[in-house]
Image (spheres, rainbow, N blue to C red):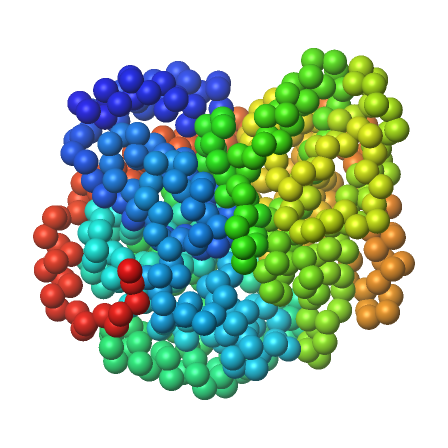
Length: 561
């Protein structure tokens, strides 16, 4: 078939696997895929301005394109480079979803920052504000998303169920099969993340439900969505808490962990998903091939380079040289959100307490304290490459002068972003990470001990998981009262330093635990299993199904290019 010929002619497809050790399994999967119908299909990917959510989708798109299929992304300009690197076509969400983005600034949650200003919600925590405006936002996004799908008529829609609520609803209205890509540790992780964000807001669930329920623009938007599209959205925050209603109409959800490593969930939540017919497929981390362009930093404005930058090859060579010389390698990344400029969660953001006043530490203060702890633990004045001092490889994000007053030691390379997966494959002795789901899975897949310094959401859950699994230690984000920041920041920096030294000192035990869990991830199937299932779903799509359904829908407002 044409699919088999594509794989034979392009050996690079063989790199789209979880680990080199499962090449034999890949050969079987290759043969199995080659026997499937080779008709060219169209796939639509709808993803947010959030690199942690879009990066796992890129190897799927790359594989589909190489198999001769057509792939179209609806996303944001900052993601263009990494999307086009897969061979897929890029389309700007700001053009299709003009009803939302005209005069508003895109962010990882849609246009939350702008909507907070419009509706006077600046004193609300990030999560409470999102709960208030998410249906207002949905009403503005839906026409453009439907126009996008009507234009390209995909066989399947692949989307982020956390940030792109418009995608499965538009697909369902048009009769197109959809598949969600969940970059959390299963549905239980979504509940844990919401619990963490609720706690950070300082409100009880009942209080949050009352606040959200009293926000009149939300109720009005829900009523209009019901009248125009027949949507019946759950108005009760208490009933929907921790539940992803965005996956109910999907064929299944791809989950980027293994079944064993998923976060637990209460039996009542598990039963609710079961009654709704929700199916979760655990494929492990979706790792891309060497040299691919990953979506990078979270800058809402301006042009931002992705990871494939001029420093990338030099960093890889430095790591290989250090490995040859027996020098320990310390990899450091606090993620893309907290080093970016996302309002409420980014570099300048400070958490909001229940009284609506800022408290705790900013993203900048958190990152610089963590980085300072790394320098305290491993910094050296030696400039001799042969010295057995650790090599520090640090991603510092897109901010101007991100290190502030920190003095960079001679054995550290600090650049905006790093080719993280390639460095992990070379071999890292300790990885200081913010604990995002992708970083956690990538580290475990490459047997890497961790120190987790979480910022928000599921990162706090993942930090505890790393400790429970025996693969590393965690240092929780400080939460000082206003005026008491400096002592707690200093204490946090010392704790980061001590934790790094402990992990490197006990490297063999932490690494043994990581190796144990890596085997589980390798057997989950990775990219090829996910692609095989997407192709199977596409085979069920009828060519005329969308046009038949779309003729019965109300006209969509102008919102797309």
